[in-house]
Image (cartoon, helix red, strand yellow):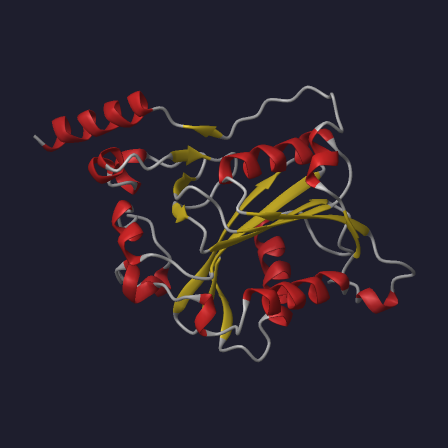
Length: 264
C-alpha cells in the first residue's frame, strides 16, 4: 500500500533535465549513465528527437519487428536500447519522459514491473485528467482503446528506470517501417497501426500545457530541482558498460538477407 505523500515530512529530491530535439541514442546513453553511475533520482524530458529512428527493446528480433527492406532503402537508423519493451519509431513529434529512481524513492512502491507501471499510470492520470478517457491498458497509455504512449523498464538491484515515448504527433508513413508484432497487447485486437494509435495533440491543447501538467504531477511526488545536461555529462568517472547501441548497416543487411533466405 502506497503511503500518501501528504503524510511525508518531506518529498524526495528528483533532478530534472529538460532537452529539446535530442537524438534518442544520446538520450539512452545519458539514461544509462545516470542509472549506473549516480545514486540520485532523475527525470529526463526530451521534446522531440532527430533524426527519425527505430528503437527496439534489448531482446527484440529484427526480422520480426522491422521492415528491413524499407529501413535499408531509406537509411533509417535502428537503435537497440538497454531496456525491455517493444519497438517504436520516434521523431520530432515524440515527447520522451524518463524516470530513474532509487527503489525507496516512492514510499510503499515495490520495485517490480507491475507496481511501477501502476504507479506511473496514476501519476500520468493526474497529467491527463480532463483530457479524454485516459487509461493504463496493460503496459500502454491510451485514450479509450487507442494507444498514445509506449513504455519500457529496466530494474537493477537498487534502482529502476521507466521511460515513455508519447506520440504528440506522428507521420503515418513512418509506421510502414514497423511490422505488426507477433506478441501484442490483447486490447490491440489485431488492429493495424493507424487503427490502434492516436495522437496526443488531439486531446491536449499544446505541448507546453502537457509540460506544465507534468511538472505539477511530478511536484506532488518529488521536490524538483532543474539540472543542465551539460553539467551531468562529465559528472562521474565511474566506469560502466553502455549497452544501448546503433545497429550497423551490415547487421541490418545480414538480418534482411537471413529473412529472405528463410522465406525462400
